Length: 356
Ligand code: CP3
Image 1: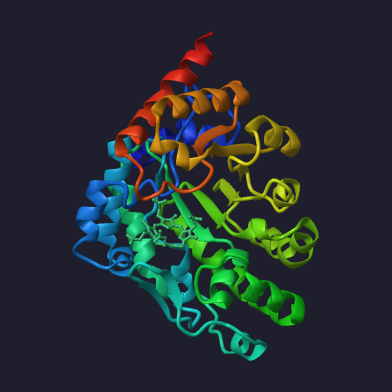
Image 2: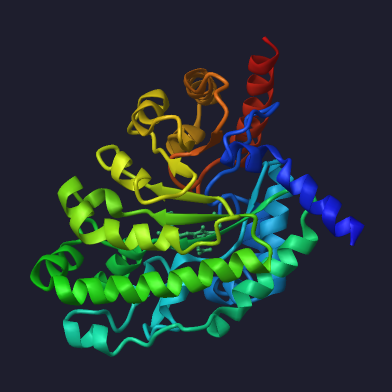
């Protein structure tokens, strides 16, 4: 019992969780979205034997790739290995990761009758493999490394469900929203309900923080965000376990930041399209921020990574509540050496800043 208590104290005092709470830290915590992914040989090796969905559904392999990435990189947090689209399966959508094509939904939602046919996810049993992975990762990680659980935000999930896959302009999803706001709200309600159950179950299984990926919400203008997304996100954040910090991530959201902040969540993601200092000033002192290096810089030369990293840390200026990250996920062709050097650079530079 003592061991359990001292482990939870170690986690509580980790730089990552302190930064989520906007408490001062000796070093700026850093982790990277998609840190366990194809840019890393260890990942490609595991992935060569199974499909992507098999990997997500095998708790032992999911544990291996999560923990290997966190330890090899020396980051301040691990992120559960899974995918935002897994939740669509128990709702009745037929998901496939087609080779070279990315995700495909074979029976997309195109009209209100398709929403009526969706199943509800009243309990998390169909995604029990994710909870098993959370428990297994938690026990395999060092006791000082927090584990981030996650889910897709309802808007981004709705885009995939309606488009049937990736999209550039989201014309099917957005015209569904404009044409039939009632069916849109019914769909968003189903997705929000399922996400609340799923994220709270991840926290109960051992995740120390929760990130909502609203990767595609930047396609909306502020007025549409307010009408079609904000009420659902507000209810979502209000329904999450209040003892677990949450991170609200999106891309291309420079015009939406205040609206996102007003939904709730302790940490707001910033991408590289906005200066970190400007974004944080607009958000105000009541939230922490995560970001915001352009993942493309990691292709090199490293001098550019160094310049931009120092600029970002300079703009954060040691204010409590900055979690260093990329503005979006690491890309598959990224040289691993640059990623390792980036983590070291953030730690060294930020601790030097603190001593001054
Ligand atoms: O960050 C991590 O290391 C944790 C694992 C994680 C993955 N996907 C693994 C993954 C997380 C947090 C996600 C979230 C996710 N999935 C998002 C939100 C983040 C973002 O990038 O905006 C989205 C939009 C998805 C949907 C998704 N999954 C797409 C569009 C693709 C195809 C991408 C591609 O480049 O092929 C995936 C597949 C996927 N998810 C991979 C990984 C490591 C690659 C799959 C493979 O091994 O072939």
